[in-house]
Length: 423
Ligand code: SF4
Image (tube, rainbow, N blue to C red; front, side, top):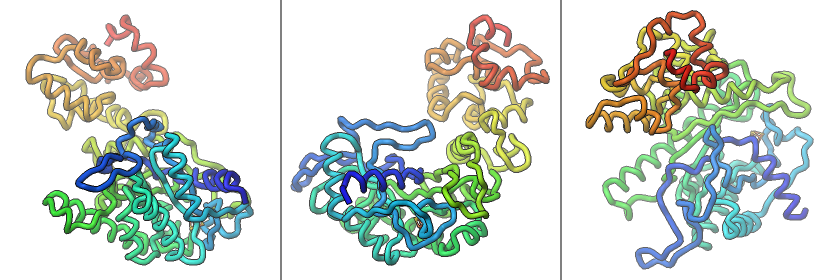
């Protein structure tokens, strides 16, 4: 089969995997260093376009499968053994050459490599690791590498993957263990967790050694950590179940990211699967809730309290939903409130909060300071007191407050200066 056709099939087959973002790794570039010759590539992206979708997905990696053939038959997967799709497989050499070629042409900043399982988990993992090994050791490739690992593969192979990759990931696939049993009976949920735990130990050990400057003693291991992906809407799990699993994964395995991928119906699907994809907004709201859990000090129950029946409110972001359920906590004085409360103001991000905290040490914050920071005043001012602004009393008692502060209807109108004066 022509290389071009293989690339068409295997890049298309990889599009279902959302778990690739080239964040958080160490800095490397192609210059000679410490007496060693230079290489090729850089994780800092000189001359390379870093493009991220709003949900954080990186779009400048060569994202492919080694093969879309698979001996497993996971019901939700287009590449399952019983699927009637054209199959293709790259050789190790082809993948190495493609990556270098695309990198030199500045099409990509790195490689995201996953695969169906061929022959055995060990055999497949060996092939994946060999691609990364050749890139690093034989070509001095310094660009970003993300390898999808196969949980049942031998621990030595996972260790080797961590030597060459910036990030490793293992997909938990579904939010609930019982769903995995029903839809992917060949997969082993406890085995996936064990592999994640082993990876965490190695990642932590490598980090600790680096901190203590015992680099020579510490084997390099996935400096950008590990991530995972969950398919949303393929089983009956509600947002509470999804986010509960997420919170547990962050706490137990120190994951850098959990990615959510809305289930896409596949041809000849099992009757166990829903006939329709979930609304994409569900995936989006889960990403927003995930950020609240990780960076904004929200507890899971607080986030879910903004919605109904275990689901997030699809109409507004979960922070705004929480604020509308806790109107008694607003408005918040930007010049006096503690960081924890400022983080809960819809429209204020974590970095902005830190800038405001630092600015208010020197002067009182006024509305024009917020405007200078290019903050969304229409969204913010109903929730904030500044030195020159206090929202008009009674806003949060109004039955139609949601219409006023929610983006679909309220923001555009409130952005106008004459409307701001009403608040
Ligand atoms: S093991 Fe992976 S590639 Fe194979 S059927 Fe399951 S999800 Fe698809």
